[in-house]
Image (cartoon, rainbow, N blue to C red):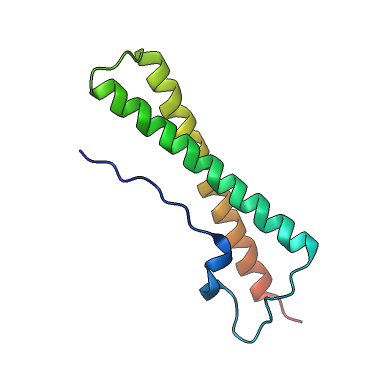
Length: 103
């Protein structure tokens, strides 16, 4: 079984998520802080996943990794990924609710 590392994708380069005709060159300080926090959270989840992958690879190749350490790292990675998935789903749900509002 081969594993694929999760690569870093800058959120600033995702232009397809913004509506056309909106000027994105001028972000408010709050918008910049949100993007920075979002990137930080994704980086932390990615780090957890990479740490778990490293422990699994070390364990499989016969390294000196106790089983409980391996299980703790896998649980951390699983929990962080589930949390990120839940937050993403809630954010999408909130966006859809706002989009349905009539002005």
